[in-house]
Length: 421
Image (cartoon, rainbow, N blue to C red; front, side, top):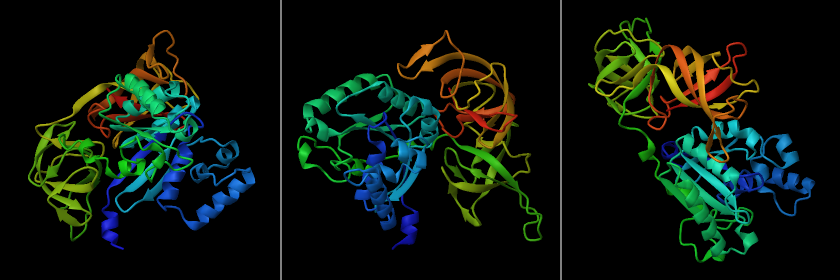
């Protein structure tokens, strides 16, 4: 096997969402089972579990429902991450819960995804939770949605029913800002159009789900225009060999940085040029997302952890007030005028929630202005003031520099995740 070629393979992160019993876990199990991405002992384990539960056939959902409580209840509670690969691509799946009380788990699972699979039961069509999951995927900047109309075997693979559901979803999704939406008629239980093309849907001329996942173009989704490099660590070896070495290590969150580029360190505003770029100990001519590298500069300028290196002619906003869409994740409700630790890239500062503009009814996508009590799983628009400047972009422009988390100062728990508007 070409190990280097395997390591260099493209990685697609995708999330699955749908109402309870729409078949998300079965679909993922089918993808892994039919693409031969399961070890023999895993197959034996789920066969045994299926027998104990009295299932008529092997229950592929058990591959992802990893928690004992999930297996017993037959539902997904937490975000279950699964990894598999085909000869064309590597995949990381986040199987997220369908219940409204686990909205925060869906936000967690979808926050790093390139693509979302939205499952719709062919018998029920578009329901409130379909809209809710699509709204969250859109809010989190996911540019590709694959709508899988599942359980087509229960509607006799009716093209008319598929087209009806497609029209319903297209009418709703006109409100969203998702550039790429595709529709596939499938049966996760039977395997139709998941990995193999189905004879039962001769009227469907599109790709199977696996073909879609293997070929969807995601490189265009990365922001290669705006150079963003949050500094995680200043490297000063103080050794005989590297006596004068002073490097700035971090992960490129946007743009392409090349040796000789003019850069500006923020928030100080001091400028210099890139002298060398290191990937490990190897010198390279350029760096781009999501590479973790070290820069050295031609000038001795003061840069510390939490600062951001940007291209001189293209800087983010340097602000002390943030307008964010906030998903609340804690049992304790948000405290208006409450103080929280705000974490942004490698930066950390104190922040205060100045005001909640409105909550979002995530079933109808309407604003709630009369009730501004923000509890667990609620999503709201809020203003946050921070004690030191943050270098931010809008979340739609750059996920890395456009996201924050709020941390409770007393318990150190992550209580909220925010997308900068």
